[in-house]
Image (cartoon, rainbow, N blue to C red):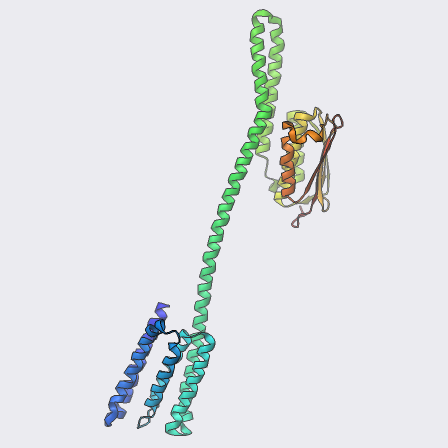
Length: 392
């Protein structure tokens, strides 16, 4: 913007000086030769002051263009006729294009064209039309390039503004992503702490009690110490298995690489080795789901198997996974001891169910559970219809 204004001032100064230099030889023998100098200098003075006065009087540009046009027409009427004074209309054309709104600027450019023809014809008659053509043509070119320059500048400014907005949005997304990662990490740590408390911590506590009992029996009844040590060894193996299971759950092989079906097959094999849980895995179809859906289902199944191992008092489970066609879903069931659904909200043994329900809703599915004491438990995740699901 500043460069454009400086260029306009320099151009007006050069044109004004060139008009004076070109007209001086034509009028040097006339008494009113001073008008050849005074007129263009007055034009230049009004030109320079236009921006300052407009700050005080908003409508001043229209008054300014009228005064300048009248001044040029007066100069065109000097004798002898000198059409080169019309060059100063080109300065007004540039100024109108850069100062006024586009529609208003085009109106003034049209007025300047008419005034050029009138000024030439009042001195030269019909021949003045021929003198007018070059000025009108150059004025049209100046108008065109001026408008193109303004459009380019506006587009550049809009692009820069959009870039700044996008950079701001990108920074906000990065902040949201970091917050999401932090929340996920906190949730993961809380889950690990709960799992450690519910499984490994209790097993280690049992190992401590067993070791204390063996120590007491060492003096009173030594033959029974062997049985306590054997029990202690079983507890240690159980704790090791639980730790391995937790580590495997916390660091599963990326689902993006192997897919949900293959990850479940591997996980079921690992659970059989670590917990002795026999899992019947039925998978229909092989479609790949969006990664968030696959991860959500994987975590739900993990939590359900954890509950079966800890609470169901059974060594068998059945998983039925539908990956054939939408709506997709999974069912996890066992024939263990079950529980009373009426006491679900007051029992601390089933806090993992709330986590499973939250995950199901987060991937657009529905969560339902069926259970009765002595009749096992059945968990269903249904109605998952991801738009991005496709073939694996």
